[in-house]
Length: 224
Ligand SMILES: Nc1ncnc2c1ncn2[C@@H]1O[C@H](COP(=O)(O)OP(=O)(O)OP(=O)(O)O)[C@@H](O)[C@H]1O
Ligand SMILES: [Mg+2]
Image (cartoon, helix red, strand yellow):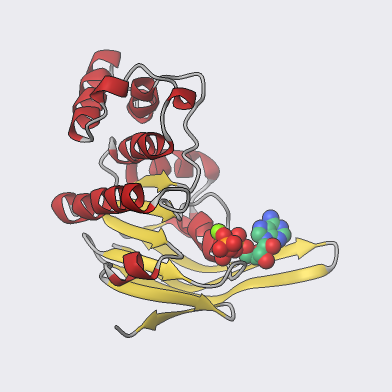
């Protein structure tokens, strides 16, 4: 489903070239839940940005469903992201002026779906997440956990093939974090979506199918 080979990335800084990823390889199957761990600054978010086509690698290849995404121009990438990739971040990144319902509807509206269709789908999803009573709340009027569940709903409404989650439970208390984690895990298994999740939680990492550690610019599989 996702196949990454020899991915390299460095940043140009006033102090010179900063090498972050050096020949990173990764293969992820459908319905598989991958955890990425590693020290702060090791390049986990950088890797997720590259996989999510939000930044270009210096070299290397990324195939998503056999599409060579490292070669696609920006206009094609925007469509690919909208149709195939769901993003969840540590902060929810919901649009502050829009209600929970409108935030969840947005990816479908961007796809050109009708407002009625988007509203029905978004409401069903919010009901499943037990958030229907919060549908008309703006993000500032949601709790942290509620906002993060809305962000999960927004990430999955298009039925993406890949979910990239960067410390999705990092800001949540333990019980809410578990709820959000279980929700992503269940989605992975029931819908067959592949998930790559960066986490600092050993417990969540251990519940994933595979754990990879980013260290010294390279990704290595941890034996469980
Ligand atoms: N745009 C940029 N320009 C220069 N350096 C950058 C840029 N973005 C990130 N870096 C550097 O790259 C390194 C990796 O950053 P990254 O955000 O990927 O780390 P991380 O593993 O996600 O860390 P954390 O666990 O703290 O989130 C850091 O040392 C950071 O300072
Ligand atoms: Mg990070």
